[in-house]
Length: 468
Ligand SMILES: [Zn+2]
Image (cartoon, rainbow, N blue to C red; front, side, top):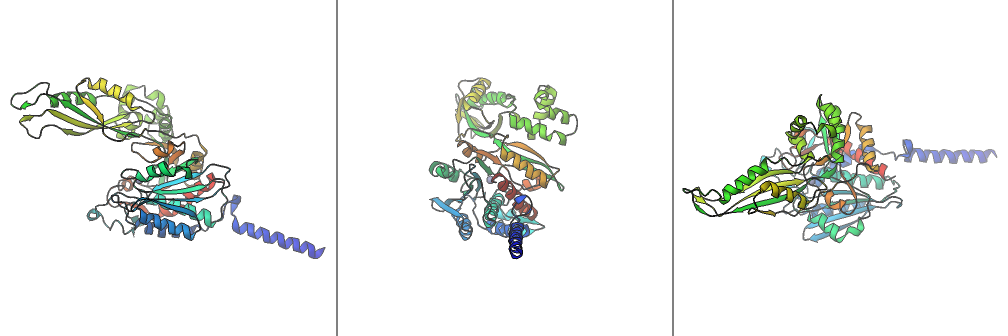
């Protein structure tokens, strides 16, 4: 009996010790974070040193780099080289299938860099004063690196998953979205059953050491570029023609630029104003908190829409960007054209917008043509488990932060994947200053080492929690 008891006790102790070493508190894997954070910084530099400037892109090199890491870690993966040197890569960790997959989507290409205007070689990934300098540091190899680290940590820690975690890195986001369009057209069977997708687009604000807010991008506006052409009788500049092509075009443009397009308050935008109300001074604080009512106050509406930061959130916008007429001062031309950059809110239809625009132009002889490939704008619900998890993890790490939604004035690939019925969010746990944000597509793009180290842990926490 005695020896039997002792044996049981020994076995129990052994089991207990194994439990302790494999799991930390709450059954969470116990993870050697400094080890993974060192690895993240090292891999970040290596990834940034692969020149994937687009054009020409040459993303195959980055895809092969990812492949070698996935292969070493025994993570199932495949490269799709859809044309010479242009490639996407997909990797997958299998879950038990009780929940639908989550996709971690990033693009491997970066915009070109004007090396002469940088403090360091844009592909050196040199660390200066606590930041890694390189093209793509923020847009968006940094986030791609967090996706890679999450895959590696989940695998190496043997985390049991309720859903598949799918890593997708694509080519050509910065130019034509060829990579994602190709994946969706040819390989969507591999991921179209996903419930969630996380990619770029989040907008977080750091002031000093405090995270002011974390904006999860749940909707983006869509570019609808138009060219207007007026035609008329040509002639000599010395003998004016009152209804010449340039005169008619300018009259129409005057009406367009003074057009106040209708105000529309989308649910995600309403949430944004309410969430950030506490950051405002009075009277805006109360106005933001009750934005639906406040927009009926013409004085407040004017003040709000005079701000570039808020105006685009509330309406379809129009920027006049190109104008052309005669090449000579003394020649009245037959045609005059201008291009306008129209951005439509999610849910808007081009036909409806054109009806309104034509009424404003009020000149049926002016031809209006769409000159880009229009992709209908869309949005994802805020009322999801993923949004809740992002908010929880953010709050745990940054108690001072407000977690809100942000609609982007620009475009991201979320729009393509939402069409498959996937809830797509733009989010990344990087906290950047206004100054750092301005380096995106600009000079001296950089990310702090602190962001890479802490982002590795925070991003993992979100994917780990949503996949339990
Ligand atoms: Zn990007």
